[in-house]
Image 1 (tube, helix red, strand yellow):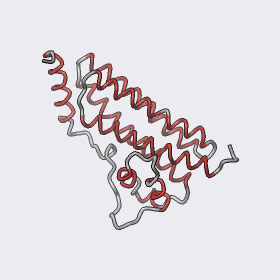
Image 2 (cartoon, one colour):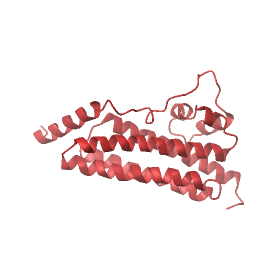
Image 3 (spheres, rainbow, N blue to C red):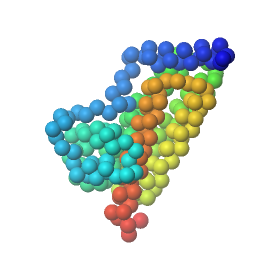
Image 4 (cartoon, one colour):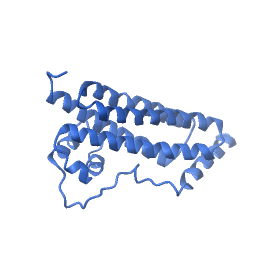
Length: 197
């Protein structure tokens, strides 16, 4: 039987996560802002159908905004993906910060603070990649790829601390989807311009 303090910790975290109704999950879970009758662009279809994309449905849904649908080239699409990834990371970071404010258990705080650090890194990386796409897709590709291990470390810390918070786990899963989309779009840019870099 697990020690009583671990059970209490899991219960408190569970209650905190589900008692934060003031936090919107709209930036964590992508919402289509257009009707389903509007077709996605060929750029979006090509990206989302690539085998490197971890979740095709998520990709299509996340990239179904009017701004993305009218993207004229891979660079514009890549810039929009990075902005969406940064927005998603900011929303998830806000959830982590809210939980930290209400939590008092050292084991969980260490894990949550590790995740806060990972999400701050993810935000900076997505924003940096957005500005690097035109000049250096190869560096952009690397900068997107290194977000993944940071989030994996966050997940490992949450598991070790026995933090069971569905909203945090969903945020981690979604950020990995944005990383795969970002990695794929920067790989495509590298292939489109092989002699320029």
